[in-house]
Each structure stands twice: as structure tokens, then as C-alpha cells.
Length: 203
Image 1 (cartoon, rainbow, N blue to C red):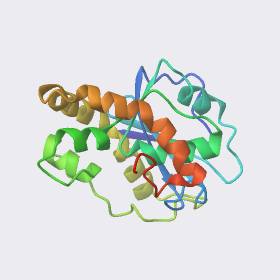
Image 2 (image 1 turned 120 degrees about the vertical axis):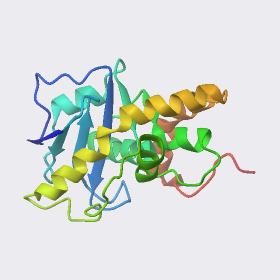
Image 3 (image 1 turned 60 degrees about the vertical axis):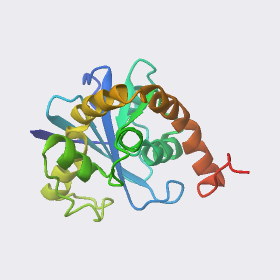
Image 4 (image 1 turned 135 degrees about the horizontal axis):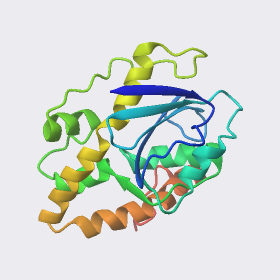
């Protein structure tokens, strides 16, 4: 596994394929309040790229182009948050989307454990460390542990997608997942607009 750190943007010549695993690290869990610090990406080849973003330096033309490319599927775990924070930061609503958390909730109804760590352990037999999950991602200089942790969060998403897609197909629920994925950009817009805690479909 190689994790490459980039400052401010992805290299122009980097090609990550038609399905790219993406994750983010922020200063907190309120996408309209807490700034985006890192964007992690992987093509599924066992390597990860980590883009460090300093406050106010969000031009990132190559990253923006990738997020807005309709020919590239963006693969997330808990896309709702990542899509919202990148929409707030870059003004781009990423799509199309595939979310392993939603897929797990629809396919693995025998459990209430749908975190990334749980999925990696249950479906892939991989133990993820979350030791530095809550740390200062806005630091000027990141530790080797932080960079390795950030990279690890996207390394297994392609394999998880394959396993969950198989389960969804077997249970005849893939169409439900695809419809939920298609709604995710709007769900993120609702979150940013002030409806994060409201079910707009409720009576």
C-alpha cells in the first residue's frame, strides 16, 4: 500500500478510472461550519492519494473536475456527509454516487452495525484502526499516522462495493439502493439548507 500526499490539488496527469473511492476529513461533523481539510481518493488498486487543503485555498481545479465528471462514479462510505461538505467547499454537487453505508443498511438487515470498520471486518476480514480518527486534521503538518489512517479509509471501498452489490442483487434490492444513491445529492443540499434533522417525507 502506498499513500501519496498532495498539497492543494491532485496532479493533472493522475487518472483514477471510472469508479473512484473518496473520503474526507474535516474539523468537525457540521458540513456548513467545519472546514474541509483532506480529500482522500483511490482507484481501487491498493494505493491512495490524500489531498491536503489549507484554509482558504480551495481552487483545486483537478479535484473539482473529477468531482463534477458525470462519467466517473464517486464511491463513498456515508456519502451524505462527504457530498455536503464538498458542495459547501467547492460549490460542486458530486454525482453519480455509490454509498457503501446505504448499501449495507439495505442489504445487511440482520445487523445494525454499518460502520466502515464493521463492514471491513465482516465482509473482508480486515481490521481497521480508528486510533487517530478524532485528531486535528487542520494541522499544518500531518503525522505519518494521520496520513496512513486517511488513506486506509478509501483502500477497501471497491471490494466492499462488489460484496454489497452481490448481496443487494441476491435480495432483489439493488434498484432500491440505486434510487437512494440518486437522491443523495439532494439529501446533502437539504442538510446544508437547514433540513438536516427533519424528515421532509413525514406527515
